[in-house]
Length: 155
Image 1 (cartoon, helix red, strand yellow):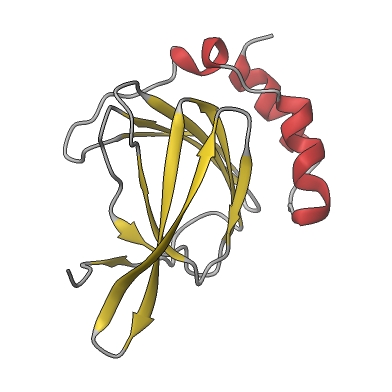
Image 2 (cartoon, rainbow, N blue to C red; image 1 turned 135 degrees about the horizontal axis):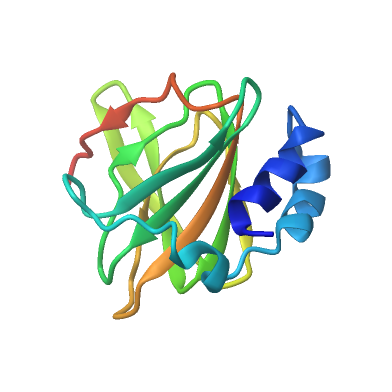
């Protein structure tokens, strides 16, 4: 069974996810670099590659490929909650505070291979690969993305 089939099997019975079942879902998926490798998309218009692996009315699963020193845009997730699993490498989750004048960097959190972290809809963040090696992350959002915003931070 390939990785996409495994994802489809898991989410055939799970239409909505929450903090209580996300660890069990990740355990069922047990994503490895070998699983993800053939689905990685190289960056084109952005610093990172993004591939939607699965989407239904309740869940969206995507794979992010961050080359060395690459960073995502500063964004939030609207009405979606998300869980991010570091498949390979390491990532700094850069957190921003929203204000009347936009967003301003606040702090960061460091995660490495095998770790899971969450982002709520109102979490404003960017992900940065601080290393010379590539980073791969698997993201699960519920409901699917669609109402988030991208921000230009103040320096």
